[in-house]
Image 1 (cartoon, helix red, strand yellow):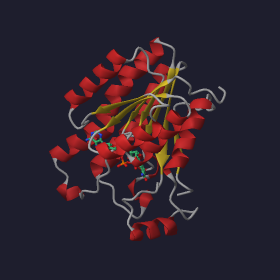
Image 2 (tube, protein in one colour):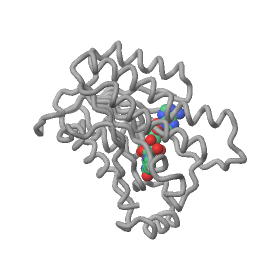
Image 3 (cartoon, rainbow, N blue to C red):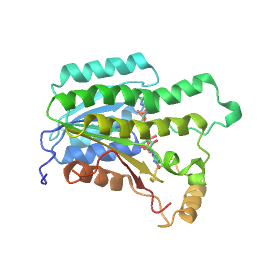
Image 4 (cartoon, rainbow, N blue to C red):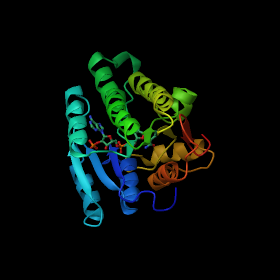
Length: 248
Ligand SMILES: NC(=O)c1ccc[n+]([C@@H]2O[C@H](COP(=O)([O-])OP(=O)(O)OC[C@H]3O[C@@H](n4cnc5c(N)ncnc54)[C@H](OP(=O)(O)O)[C@@H]3O)[C@@H](O)[C@H]2O)c1
């Protein structure tokens, strides 16, 4: 597909108010995609993003708390009713957690799994099936290195059990859907190592720089570049999770 591959295509981005989601939305929107952007609490960030893109780019904003399954079902209903077809689904939604094993409890497990896995499973199943019976498309999931390399891979952080399990599920979801929905719908995962963020403290940045072979965190824009590549040029990339980790 050529450089105009995004023009007029309907893109749903979950977690579009987050660090990585914002950059992905900005890149795809700047290149002509019609954006349906999900957010939850970060209203200021998502409105700022929308104002950078409008009026040149179509932007629809949808607020939804994915920790509650009923809300996710309403979200899906809204998207399916309003848009005849969705061409691209990017799942960047995710909540990180470091609760120690001792303190993990049922509420935490259900919240993390709902946001990081169940919501994405429901949305991908619905929109992916519509793509399959319609004109095809691509789903890209932001997962994590832990299912591929174990929870100690990050060295500078200690991800919690529900977080690690949710991302393992997301990795399997990616492979399962790719196999079921091929060849019309490709499903690909991206497993970032460290992406720069205002949430990273100077100590953490130092720890990351010491542990990552390329000696720096990634820019969110670099993830957005990879997403664009996967959509526009990566027709042979399917059912896999790409490590984006600077050699970690
Ligand atoms: N950044 C990294 O270094 C890194 C590394 C490995 C994996 N990842 C994965 O990459 C993805 C994006 O990461 P990021 O750094 O952009 O994260 P982020 O800045 O924390 O953004 C997370 C997104 O998820 C949304 N979200 C969180 N809880 C939610 C809830 N209960 N209901 C609905 N939405 C909710 C947030 O919405 P609001 O802010 O509007 O509430 C936000 O849009 C995540 O899946 C993350 O696990 C990131």
